Length: 285
Ligand SMILES: *[C@@H]1O[C@H](CO)[C@@H](O)[C@H](O)[C@H]1NC(C)=O
Ligand SMILES: *[C@@H]1O[C@H](CO)[C@@H](O)[C@H](O)[C@H]1NC(C)=O
Image 1 (cartoon, helix red, strand yellow):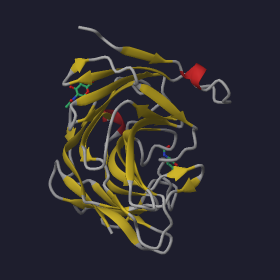
Image 2 (image 1 turned 180 degrees about the vertical axis):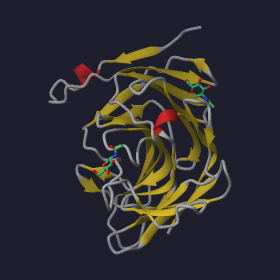
Image 3 (image 1 turned 180 degrees about the horizontal axis):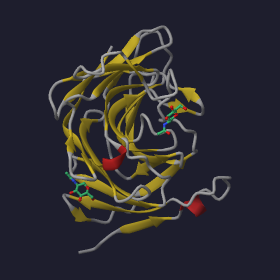
Image 4 (image 1 turned 90 degrees about the horizontal axis):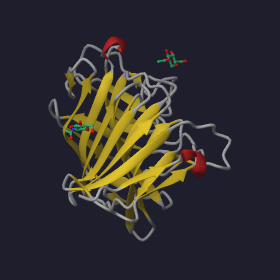
């Protein structure tokens, strides 16, 4: 069995950057679970802009209504919609899994193209101020309605890496599985379930995680310091998805915080809606 392993040295990728990154990773690609050779597997580094970080209306990733005792609390964010779950510092998040579709976009009327939506799962996007480990897909829709999508991963505040060589298109079912081996090491597996192709990335020396919360979401992310225009999108389900703690506790969507994205005028653009403990849907408005 031929095993393909590509090692990417961040130091060489960011030779001109001032970031003194120590993060390193090795990656491999699997077809139906078996290592294969894909000559064009590559990771395109994007500047560490801090986009995809949850911007907030207060100092947290979201603020809560005063209904903490209710199931499926609704919160509001200025840049994301979906679900968030929390754990105690003594039993941190060790794994998050999300099965979801690549955003299928439609132009939002009255707003210039191109428009975007990113769907991803992550650890520490809400309450941990220093870092965020995330992987998912971004779709762009142009003025003629044409779409293109790409998969990526990012360990904020380090750079984001677009995965060249993993084909994705709107509507494809994806599986993202992030496992933390420690607060600074993780394995990310991104699978296009439609094609049976997975990319496995083993990362070391990442920024220290809090492992406090887990998120499944759609984001109106930042690019070059500016928030992109959020397109409308087909209902985006997360199915059979969950997080697991270091102590082995399974965390689903029961009692998750459902988050709605509200623009500056108070208009809701998308929101997480509860379904059951392992499934929920993000609805575009
Ligand atoms: C993040 O920052 C906020 C506001 O400064 C603070 O209240 C909160 O405790 C911080 N969270 C962590 C995990 O440090
Ligand atoms: C998630 O990834 C971890 C680490 O690679 C692996 O041990 C685990 O079996 C995966 N889980 C699923 C559901 O694929």
